[in-house]
Picture 1 (tube, rainbow, N blue to C red):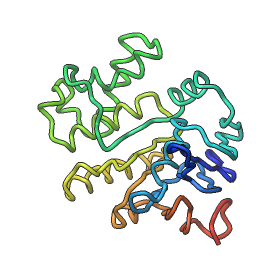
Picture 2: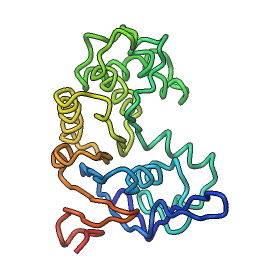
Picture 3: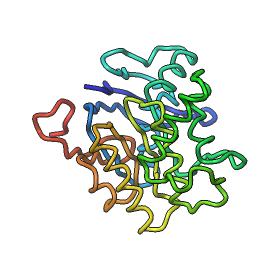
Picture 4: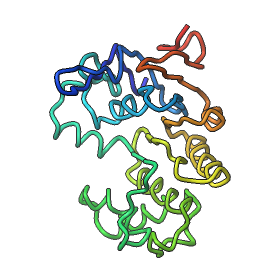
Amino acid sequence: MLIELREVERCFKRGRETVPGLRPTSLVVRAGEFVAILGPSGSGKSTLMNVIGLLDRPTAGQLLLDGADCAGLDRNALARIRNRRIGLVFQAYHLLPRQTVIDNVELPLTYAGIGRAERQRRAAEAIDRVRLAHRINHLPALLSGGEQQRAAIARAIVSNPDVLLADEPTGALDSATGKEIIGVLLALNGEGRTIVMVTHDESLARSAGRVVTMRDGRVVADSAPADAPGAEQ
């Protein structure tokens, strides 16, 4: 199994009060799965995504990546793992406005010290995989919302991460463009890439092979097969 949460909790301090954002939660994501985490605002789904993406540290419990517990690692170690093994896509595209599509997509490789020729080759390949090659030298301001999200997805996969985490990737898009982005994610999953997507949209969640439903900081339903590790009964 690629990702495993064992009784993971995440609590937040608000003044003197401790607020549970994620109650004891166990979950397994296997390599090659497309998992949608579904739930309304405040259900804990984004907190769960941040924990899986090593952006937030659990208050209690274990988070295992390929069997190695990441929960107790320091910030620098978490950053190294995240940069190498996890691709992140958000509702806001976070593209640098003065950089072209290919320059934006190259960024993770630049930070990793990859040479220019290899960066450009891999970035062009990632852009082609999200069907955006015709916009490769455009600035973000000249792209539609859907094209900007495709560029953000290309940037997230350019380092060939083990898992792609997408937090409300269609939230800023109209329904037709949102379906196009889901099509891009499905195509990447068809190539064997593991994808975990947070959404509040039930119709989009059904596009995934598995739907994990959250409410009040807990997993309340899981459409994984009953005999799969971590499946809710």
